Length: 299
Ligand code: GDP
Image (cartoon, rainbow, N blue to C red; front, side, top):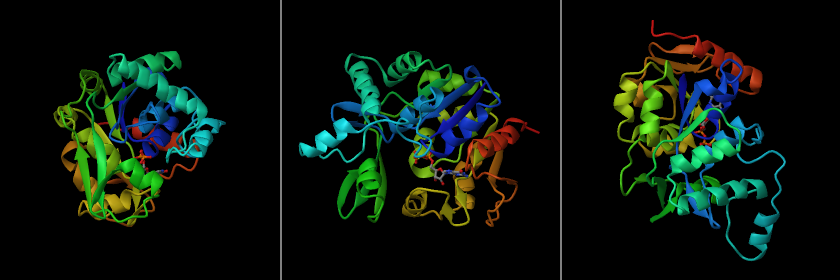
């Protein structure tokens, strides 16, 4: 069994490649839920949805969110009715969010709801929310606090970040399913996801760090030089007082990992790192990277 810690873009790209070498029954994914949001009556869990759509073969791999060929009739109509639905939710995508919202409202945990949806979508991999408790990444900007989705999707990351806040009123604790998956794994891969908004929320769940200390853990950097391959990870690292590069990323994960992988083009010196081609511009590149990672051993 291999367990990935994942956000919604970089690590799913790697998982797509790993599926060439492993059956889905041998894959567990611990997924960030700090970007979740109730919106227009449904429960949006963007990173979980990307994994559900990836494993069920319907993901839009042009954007790494949403469903291939989805339509946006409801979204367009909501905008026409004056509803500020600032995230473009597709019609089929919305059905998943309504179904998840219904399951949560009828008493299921997020883990339970995800298991049910996985079953209905015919998914054999284990898609595991990092926690069943509420967690949100919030951004302080211009003296007010907004949800990370509002910062990234509504404002397209164009406003200054004064502080990154993790809101977790009752926890968060990792679920027993997550801890069991890590314990049962031959290898845990922290994929090239955004450290501040995707991986740290997972590491902050009680129980995760001790579980990882006992596991064989590989991390892949999402940075090349002084910038991420894509997205707002640079600004978020700076807001945490960290430089947006592989060295800072390695320092964040240092105590947990056995091997750190940075891109072959990355000029930043990270002592002891393994340099590989980590640019997953297509499925073949993802599969090649995954093959090398999966062949790694503790020695
Ligand atoms: P999010 O939930 O959409 O923010 O997605 P993730 O956190 O899973 O991934 C975002 C990170 O993936 C960004 O910081 C990118 O730099 C990184 N990323 C995207 N594509 C690649 C790639 O092909 N190679 C590497 N090394 N990193 C990538």
